[in-house]
Image (tube, rainbow, N blue to C red; front, top):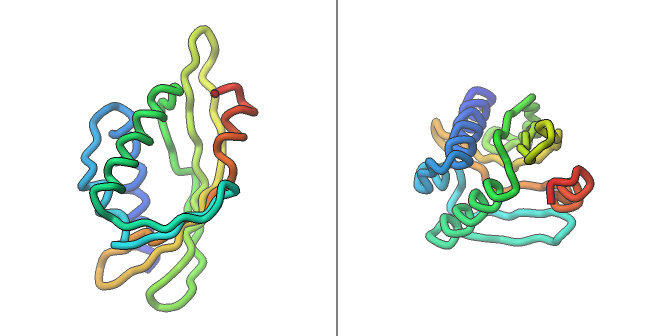
Amino acid sequence: METAVRKLFTRYERFFNRSLHGESDLAEIASLYASDFIAASPAGVMVGQNDERLKQVMAQGYAYYRTIGTKQMRIRDVRISPIDAFHCVAHVAWTATYVRKGQPDTTIDFDVHYLVQQLGDEAKVFGWISGDEQAVLKQHGIV
């Protein structure tokens, strides 16, 4: 399972960065997710489906990240906590880099905990738990 999960997040990082540069392939990005998913943050819990609405929301999200100057998302570390033979939690440590006019780049480290399922050879995200992204962006003067 560990190899499949690491491969999943290598792809995730690559697709995310391509999207930050306006080179989104939403079908490729959607392929990282299971047919249904759950997301939790201080803003609440939501459930969704891997459908056209997800692709639309993702396109809007990447556009937003570009408008606030997100230059790069880099994975610092992936730590895997197995649950059973088919599921794990992938604790992913990210570094985001933001460009701001007249100032040096700003980097912010944060963690997201992904629920991952592997059926067959491929691992897919079926959920994630994150902190208060907007509060962190405000704290660093990004928004």
